[in-house]
Image (cartoon, rainbow, N blue to C red; front, side, top):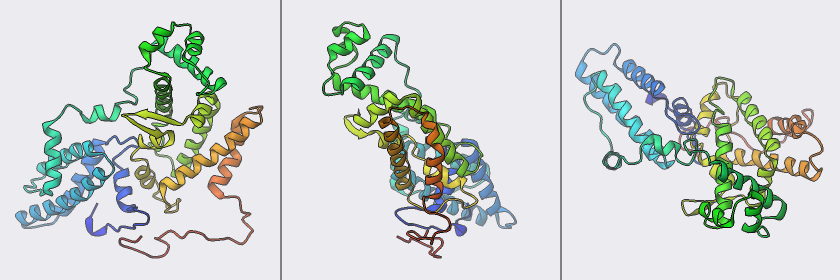
Length: 350
């Protein structure tokens, strides 16, 4: 965390060193590891203070470094829509610096305004934001779950446009009036069903990239878990493909976009795990969407075959293509992309 050692490689909006830095503190879902952050800030400040004779000058220099660091990190978190997390991170940094005798930490007035606004309106805590609409959502009651199960069956067999609320009420063995007590319309029922589906996926992958395994092993584990989820929930998956948008906060969103948005720091976590440089410096979201899209194609093939074999039988081919491509190793290698760090480029490079 020494500022003079920070080198930024920017290509498509990426700042690799900063990603690796934040990935050590944040889990993929945006949860801050307070102990890890406190330790890192404390060690960085102590390293700057070590061996210094004039205490006042040391405190000033340490405060200047911390101010610059916080400006950089808080600005990045705000750009990612993680404004609430800035309050938590700022509080921890100030607390640790005070323990070490740092007397002055300056911050851009715009950041201070945002932090003060959050302090004055604490109705939405960090914990509430983190869990709202996700793992903190209470599970549906038995009757509502029965309606979801029936709707999934009817939507899958009849298609959303042809399905009716009468059919869903009959399939779930509830009165039509009861159905409308839970859902305003067929569209509302579909939206809630897809939202519940996304929450199941989020719960399934909440532990992805949080372990200590090598990054390639974690990517493989994620792919294997995604294939297993599709195989176990193929009706839900087909519905996602057919009606893959959800209504949330008045805005319709593609399912994958909603899924990825619930893991705002997965890119940073992946970069932090790649200490050995096993991954190329590629656009993370391009790769993520590409991987999911390739798997979609394999799954469609499985559907066309009537699902007459286990989907997991496709894993070796999926992993081979995603990890190694499809060109024979003995073939003349075509180079389409050279990571910026291999070009020797430093600074703010596009």
